[in-house]
Amino acid sequence: MKPFAYERALDRAAAIAALAARPNAVFLGGGTNLVDLMKLGVATPDLLVDVARLPHDRVEPLPGGGVRIGAAVRNSDLAADRTIRRAYPALSQALLAGASGQLRNLATVGGNLMQRTRCVYFQDVTKPCNKREPGTGCPARLGHHRDLAILGASEACIATHPSDMAWTSIACRPMTRAGTQCWSTPS
Image (cartoon, rainbow, N blue to C red; front, side, top):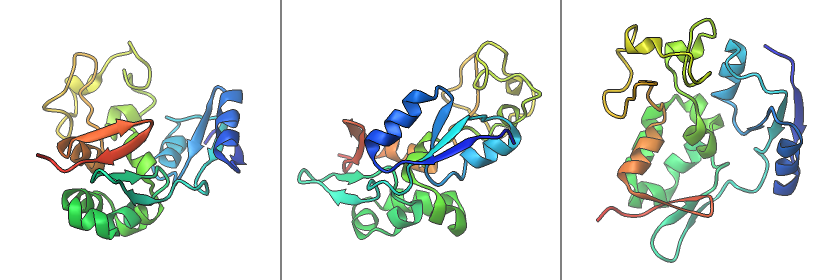
């Protein structure tokens, strides 16, 4: 693993400033996907800005019937939330099906939505990959592609997004306002 610096952000402004000051810096929440990619050499940040303790870990019902879910909410907490289980059971079920209990207890909503593909070519830095380095090619198109895209593929890439929560949110018609993810009840 490439050496990196670590900084715990004390507030949102400090987190943004730290990221802006270092072009190869990344936010760290639970780190369940990022750390794996760092071990493989796929992700090579110079600085990890820990945002896990910032106050973005709430699930709040909204007056219009939706819900505001903070990026730092742990997947296990979201899956167990009474409002989510009652009003959005598919979201709760997707979170419970998507990972082990150990991962759900560490993984965050923000990280779940931002995680990178699990395509074997993406994770192997000795192979070309358009997601890692645009224009290098996509060997998955002709190679090992059993678990990759059927719908939504392109000439550039056939990798899928690994988040069950992301696909469920699409099915539940998410509305994005000012960086906040809200789920509305499908009509």
